[in-house]
Amino acid sequence: MLSEQATPVIRATLPIVGSAMGDIAELFYRKLFDARPALLRDLFNRGNQANGEQRQALAGSIVAFAGMLLEQPGTRPDAMLARIAHKHASLGITSDQYKIVHHHLFAALADVLGDAVTDEVAEAWDEVYWLMANALIAVETRLYQEAGAPEGEVWRSMEITGRRQETADVVSFLLRPRDGRPAGAFRAGQYVSVRAELADGARQIRQYSLSAAPGRPDWRISVKRAHGATGPEGEVSTWLHEHAHPGDVLTVSVPFGDLVLPEGDGPLLLASAGIGNTPVLALLDHLVSTGADRRVVTVHADRTPADHAHRVEHLALARALPGARLHLWYESPGHDAPDAPDGQDGQAGQADLGGLDLPEDLTAYLCGPLPFMRAVRGDLLRRGIPAERIHYEVFGPDLWLGR
Image 1: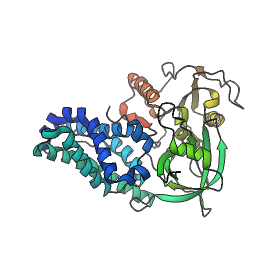
Image 2 (image 1 turned 90 degrees about the horizontal axis):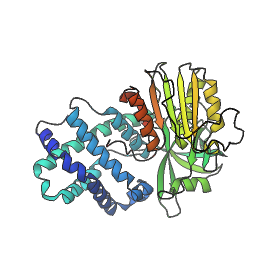
Image 3 (image 1 turned 90 degrees about the vertical axis):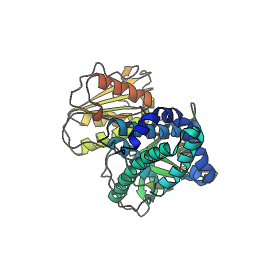
Image 4 (image 1 turned 60 degrees about the vertical axis):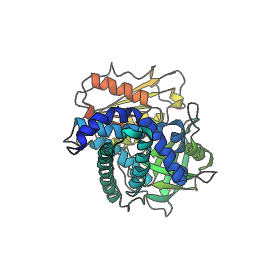
């Protein structure tokens, strides 16, 4: 909770800081990487730095957190903090790194806003920063403890035991510890980080959802190659597609992620688009393997059936759940995938929840491109589904935090 002294200062300065936060974030990263170039090479996603998404996410998270402190002073934005903390833990972020971020962020704040940053303003925003940082550190400490990993020590060597071309752009990999032991437990819907050493010596990290249920000796990830049509070429996805084969060893984190099913037997909506179906596959697989009979509405949108990764498996899992119903939309439904079951061509166009029979007490899980998730979330809100029952996973920086 903000102090009595800081609250009016943050309320008065939030508009100007919020409007300038994009410039502050850009300068912050420039200062940070000038001082510590290894962070860009070995920790931060160079693609997201190049396209500006990481700056937007940082700016949005700080502004959103400050706004929540003002609007809901007696509460803590646990969902927002959990999402960030899981991502940080999957990267091996440690508590001492928050001091480094603080130093360069507040130097950037002073440079961008100049004389507007009085001692009083600096102290108030310092309070906001450390409220957020200490809350994240507490959550991350708990996550490391639950994972049985000392702070930041989340990495393990895993051998690729299988590789399968799922679509023209998606390859799945089976992973197992090098000593041959089973890969270990996780919760359906979670992800792992993969650290790849690239040709220029950089060790870049990306997160990939575990796309099959827990309980098997191997973990499975499904990697879509990012071709760079609207941004930088995907460095790690390209490397995995071109260089990762059975017998090779990858550096992989322990699993993290908060897109996991609630306890109970309440109805669910699992909505995905494109490669966003990977955590949904794990959730469906888990429901099937545990004999769940809860009502499940599954929605998936894709370009064509041939682009729908794990399509046959997706359909089979939905059929195996007695309470499930699958709805498919394809931009071009006439392009059949190999071995596609009859009668599953899907509807033409974008996903539309308007005609679906959705129970009022459902819990929704969304994963896919931001425009898809915004559209689905808007449909659900208009139908009276409370925002706190709509969960989502973002591949990459969370650009929703400022909304």
